Amino acid sequence: MVDKAEYFQNMYDYISNLDETIKTNQPLYEKRLMICKNCDLLTDGMCKACGCFVEMRAAIRKNSCPYEKWVAATE
Image (tube, rainbow, N blue to C red; front, top):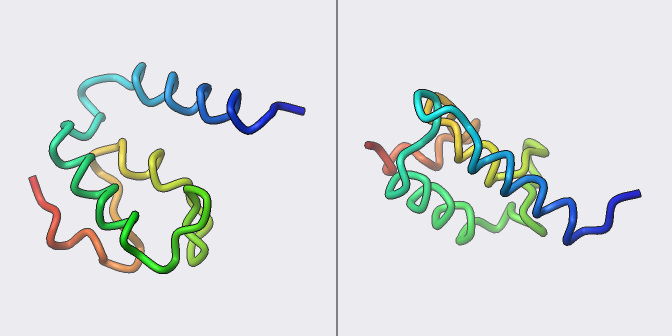
């Protein structure tokens, strides 16, 4: 079993190695994460509504919040 710190490091490594053609640009990524950070559905990096890890969802440009909370965060 992977401990929490190792799990998150693996996730950050995955995000940093995403192909640039699918990766969200840094300003948009940060806007998305700020919206999630201020959402009452966020718990330990996971959306309680849809079950995603928000950092993973936010990292891919074509993704969206299934609850349309990122509508204000556009490129």
